[in-house]
Image 1 (tube, rainbow over the protein chains, first blue to last red):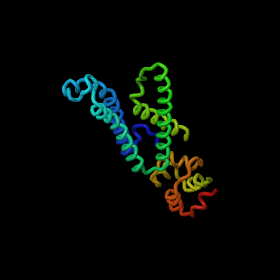
Image 2 (tube, chains in turn brown, yellow):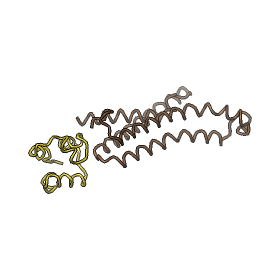
Image 3 (cartoon, rainbow over the protein chains, first blue to last red):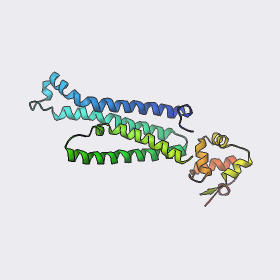
Length: 148
Length: 62
C-alpha cells in the first residue's frame, strides 16, 4: 500500500476525509471564535457585566469550541486505529502521531519564547491542531519511505 | 528476529503482493517482516505458520 489516493482502503479514505473536515473545523473555530465576542456582547449586553469586558462564561464557552476539533481528531484517529486490520500500518500511524505531537510541542515551545520576548501573539499557535495534522501526515510519509 | 519468510515464499512462487493478500495485510507489511525490520504479532505469526503449514519456530528464530 503506497498510500497514494488510488491505493487507499475505504477505511483510510474515510479517515482522510474526516481528518480534512477536522482540519477545516480547526481553522473555522480558532479563527472565528475571537471575532464572535464583540457581536455577541452587542446582541446580549448581559454577557458583559464588567463594562466592556466579556464575561468569563462567554469566553469560556467560546474557547470550548476550540476544543471540538481536537476531540474530534482524537476520535477519528482512535476509530481508525481500532478498525485498521494491518498491524504494520497501525504501527506506522502511531509513530507518525507521536512525531506530529513532538513537532507541535516543539513548535509551541519555540513560539512561546518568541511570544515572551516580543510580547505579542504568534499567529500559528491558534492553528496548533492543523500544525499537528500536517506534521503527522509528513511524518507518516517519511516513516513509510524509510521502509522502502 | 530472524525469519525464513522470503525463502518460504519463493519456494511457493508467491510474490510479496500474493502473500500480503493471503494474510490480509499490505505488501509493505510483508516486505518489512521479510527484511526483519518489523516483528509480527502472535496472531499474524500463527497466520503465517498456518499458511505455510509449518510450526512458528521453523519460520521465526531469535
